[in-house]
Image 1 (tube, helix red, strand yellow):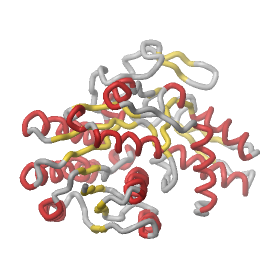
Image 2 (cartoon, rainbow, N blue to C red; image 1 turned 120 degrees about the vertical axis):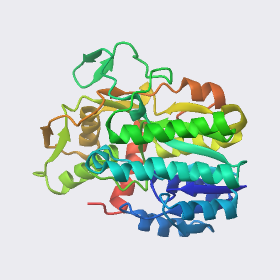
Image 3 (cartoon, one colour; image 1 turned 45 degrees about the vertical axis):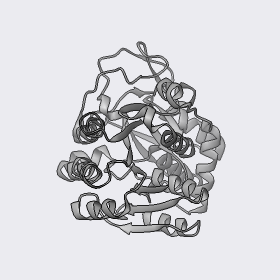
Image 4 (cartoon, helix red, strand yellow; image 1 turned 180 degrees about the vertical axis):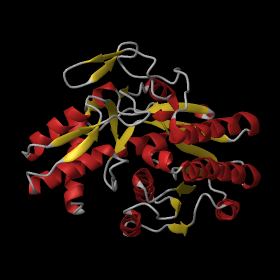
Length: 341
């Protein structure tokens, strides 16, 4: 089987590539190496096995068309994207070109040149908007949602907010509609918070990795401080990258069953935590006191998002396997090894 990963040097793409190389699959990685750390990740992947690397940009129609026309991959993991809400607000045109135009380039190339290719798209929980129409209960360290105590299912209405939500939401719907209109084999995964090795987090993307870096900085300098947006009680369910990789691999084996479907993907209620709860875990693990400065809430932030993953469990038998504690331990060890501070 031939596998193509767009954004293959990012967090999810590199972990997926690692798994495919372990399985000795035929792999092509497509990436423009624009994100911090992707060059290091590419160098690391080259030590794991043989694959073809294509330095290209999904915004460039020729880059995409020529590759898909030549390769005709069996499976495409479309993971390339603009992933920060703050960047989308500062530069909505760039956000649109990467997330919407880039996705159209993939879909059109497959429709014209490789209609048997299966496409799996990494979407986001932001397609559901701010979720402010539900009732939230403020507890000591977190918020909870009265209407959805065990997580949000795919049945809740789509509500695109912020340029990022609009671009990812539009791409999400294009992916599904190309199944309805053209019969392409497509599936969408609406991610909650993903973390793991090969995540070169920044202040506006990859919050678990970013706060691990801030905690490790505080170990070296106890007087160091950092900011958070909001009161720290906002909740996400976190999913270790390895578990998400298992989802994507399982999905390839069930594409005929799940084609045209969207799935909420996250750690579920058992792997949910607020910022304050994450800080408490890091303080305990690293024996440090974190110095937090609170700033106003970010635009279009959600007080809580926990994915109800029942649909994925029922349709292709996927389950989380890595606990928050285990995932954080691996992430801390990797961050120290990579000398991210």
